[in-house]
Image (cartoon, rainbow, N blue to C red; front, side, top):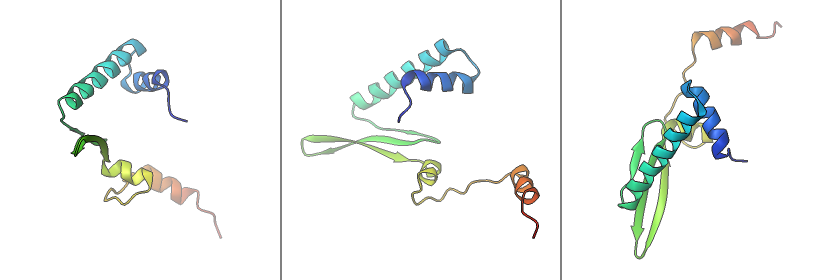
Length: 100
């Protein structure tokens, strides 16, 4: 089940270390800016997320999304993204390996 706007704002506020009112203003401004770009027929590419664009075919406009490599990786799609292991995770993997 997808996150509601309220749940998303709560998560975003926590990630930004701010209050939910500020996060809500940010989400509203972000959404409106994207709508303004799409209204003039343009697309936008956002690092670490992907590209949103409109494709016109005949008398139909198609909305497309091209995810970034990291998102493609997490979706299980073909990707060039390689997850980085930090030393702590490797240490935990070694520490918890069963002794035979």
